[in-house]
Image (cartoon, rainbow, N blue to C red; front, side, top):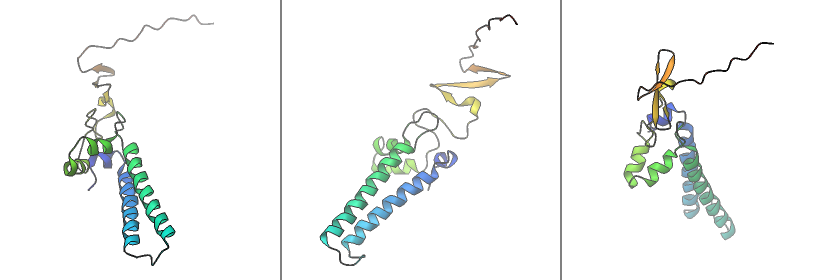
Length: 146
């Protein structure tokens, strides 16, 4: 199952592609060990197993680097693997709905997206931080017309 967060941020293809490459690499290794591809010389066997392992590591690193939060660029796949225990990390990754770092949710309106830890809200036609302090715009200098 793909998490709603990844689906709504259009990153589903990254997960599907990454796991497909990893499955193909593991299948290649298993096939080499069980003679699915016929008898091979030791050089061919070593080349296939090495190429499959490189594909697995490459897909794994690619998933860590590219599956990120659009709000804060936090690596979400890495968070699932490093911050959670083994079975719960992948379960969390398949069902999470907000970024654990910035609490970004893909169904948020653009005018309430987190900005450096503070949310903005649109009040009338002006932006206000949540602490209700009004922002003031610097006065524009009047330039003489020519």
